[in-house]
Image (cartoon, rainbow, N blue to C red; front, side):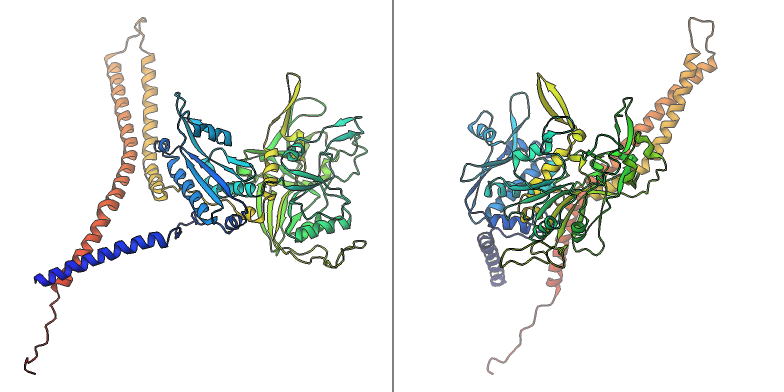
Length: 630
């Protein structure tokens, strides 16, 4: 017996040592390995981010400023802070030594705090003593370039990977992206023959010039340079076949295109006199190319939307009137899953059209902006002479459908010129025209050009004799977001927002709704009883006036005391109902804790004891008795 016990304990010790050895070995040999079992693959780096990391040519330093000690008292931040920390660590491991991560916990009035401010990371005040909370990222490259995420907003955690990948990409490619800009509208300023004065460039165009290398492109252009990162098309019309062919070939090379088309461009004022402008076509015409890209656009229809209508001032004076063609799109009409529109609260559009995916197209069509369901397409001809916008409501019949005003389109497409280059276009020697995409097309398109004009989103103010511009809507941010997104590589564009890191307790919420519904009817009934009792009590008290001859009788006095007692009882029952709801939720929490902490471990322990008991009851094998002399 003693020998068997010794052997048993020896086996246990050997197994324990083996387990410890395997654990140490796995910690070293499997460092960096992970198995992502989350529903939305929250911890899996996208292929686009991996390719961005592999493309880094020179070392990049990342500085993660995080007040870890202060975050312990902020439960809304701490889990996300750990998520950001782990994500940055993983990127560093995957970068093959090209990213150097520095984790810094800035103390008040320290050199690290000054360094954070210098690199563009801002701190949030926690108290009156000057303590600031830091939760941001800064990066520098070998050419003294720097980029920063001033603060990781927990409400934008779905875009964590995109924001960090974008910062790394910008550090790895520090030059201003080249943007070719083709517009038939007067966006660039110049002399206005109608007013006889110089015209200022539109604000959105000036903003783009500050951030990008803008290269104006004429409507007669026959080629788009290979260094162009984004092609912007604003109200394309009367483009020659040669220009359309150049755009087509750029798209087939995997071009990034930002397009604004319109059934009725308000900014295209080609005549002052409405009678002279009757025959002027103010619609965009890009149908041949859009069809090849899988996008449907009807230049003859404008979206009228009563649910998003704005009040506009009348040209003849008078009070503003509701115009169902001038729309103010709020968050409910903007995609919250795309980086271009997720951070915007409002975008204004005017006489906008709508976009549809062409059936059978091989592209991915993702709406970015849309109307409400209280909308209807109306003929663009109705805007030729429209003295009163309220007349648009005559015969207005909403279809109950949402109409897409902006969309992102990606995928492999075919040429819009299947018969070859148009007449007069000669290709360079040794070069053939492309008949299909060699890389996926990245197109962001809006069915409105007026959203670019200053009148729709900018308020001009005079501050001490200087003209300043204040944004009244997010139109400018929308355009800059689109340019910023498209000017990155296809790998960066492919990094989309993913589901939030923090997930709610759906079962708890469901049980809470059931409990709430169970108590709601009783609570409402008691509230009504309390209100009736209060009214009767007020009526009796109004009859009581000690300064008058009217004195309450003993019966009335008794009734008054009865109502007072009933009022207290109803309030007591009402508090009991409200407390019951809280009690049920607390009871649920206690039950879950008991199950997780006591019941489940107990079940496993009991199962282990039963297995051991069954093994002990099994009869020991009887050794074979052999004759020792045999």
